Image 1 (cartoon, rainbow, N blue to C red):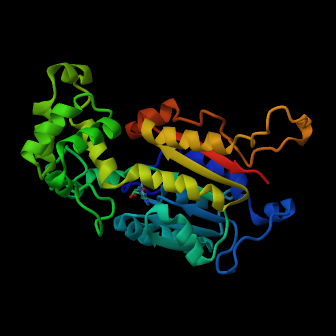
Image 2: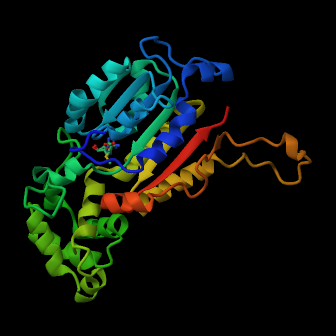
Image 3: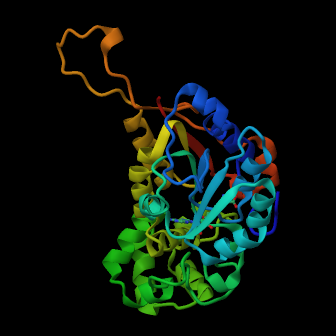
Length: 340
Ligand SMILES: C[S@@+](CC[C@H](N)C(=O)[O-])C[C@H]1O[C@@H](n2cnc3c(N)ncnc32)[C@H](O)[C@@H]1O
């Protein structure tokens, strides 16, 4: 596995979760699944990595004979990730005879990307949400309060407003709502007031403004381990990148593009994301309602179109991973399977 750009989380769990869907094609033709790509340039099984990042998950799937796709569509909205994949993933895919398509695009455009490639349905999709270590640890990207840099926070630097520009124009009430909703920040009102008064343009200036504005009570509650600006930075990042809207659009489009027995796996890192994934997956895995009182025997009732192969709770990292990679702490993997 390539280290340096990002250390992927829950790798074994992702490989195991996607293995039944990516089983070599003989298995899927034995099941009688219809071919799903109009263009033989994209041989099956087709895997979509919606958040390629450092490509650690995709490389792990390529290295395991149970899960090696024959086509990989790897997307990321960050051009750095696409360049990294060109240098690291491309040579390995070529050596294994795997067709690789790299796409610089947000995963909200999944359906358009697949339509352009004339791929109607795929065997597996993975979305590993949030930011990469590369983004967090590159000071110039402006995601972190650990180093001083211009406050940018855009995953895609070719479009949208930087965090500094957002803060230069935002109204206090709107900022307060963002801090409360996306950061679950209890001191949202006073922090928003201080930020609007200072309109900070660097990560250090924002961190200082938040620290000074936060109530002593709230600082005591966070303790020494959590930086006072952690929640403000998270909220601002979610807002700048429209992360929850992106996720909602992925949750609408991705299940539709799974072939029979295809699986969608999503790793989330905080409760706001996880709640959206959990609610959408459980709605899809519920059988359609039958009008009350209709005398339909149990065996003839319509069944759900999707199931939850990892159950209702999904999976979280084990002790060893938690010890080796503290950033895995809040991760949770959930999976959805389209029934045949
Ligand atoms: C946690 S990292 C993924 C790491 C990757 N699974 C690996 O093994 O290295 C998240 C990646 O998703 C990308 N990303 C986040 N939101 C995205 C979106 N809406 N569309 C496309 N890419 C996104 C980020 O730019 C980042 O590179």
